[in-house]
Length: 116
Length: 115
View 1 (cartoon, each protein chain N blue to C red):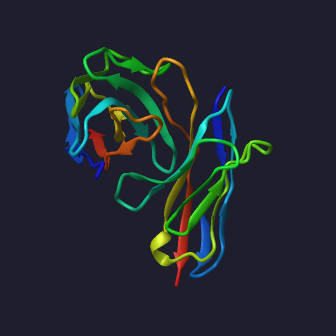
View 2 (tube, rainbow over the protein chains, first blue to last red):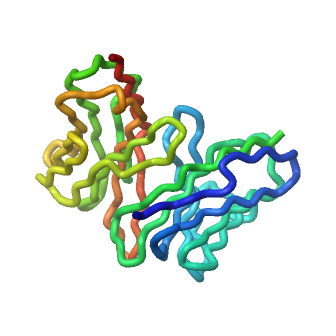
């Protein structure tokens, strides 16, 4: 149980284009989903927290107009990287907290974004 | 502020050796503490957790005890296997009001176990 999927697993895009990454909780409802970036051999950096049906809360230094987050249902959140640049290349990971849960988060396998 | 400090890796051990990965934290209040594991090519998986002082989390032979007096949550395993090779992340979740708790991660410690 508690499986989170991400799609796509890898994506390569040209500079200036936009890319959408999906995060789904497959066997539970998630009132809260989180988006992280992970740089090579480094830890996860929280980008934003999204609650179903409301606007995402972004961490300091994360551009909300560049990283658009939508949490339209209890099982789906999307992250859109707009006007991508090479410095946006990274590993993006989502996690989901079950409805009624407290501290636990279940993580997706991640999406490798490469901007050329 | 809230932060987590882990010992730097990589940690290289022979099979059946004893493992300790140190983790200390700084937090306001009484956070929950976690160890997550990331196997090659996979997402993070919750390994164990502890929610209050003196609690011991355990799973798959791994253990960690929430030590408030030393603000530590060191991960231990008595006999590691090759299949334990992965990156281990210590994390805390501050007990915030308002209903949601984010995770704050340490830098991760890579463990390599050789036969």
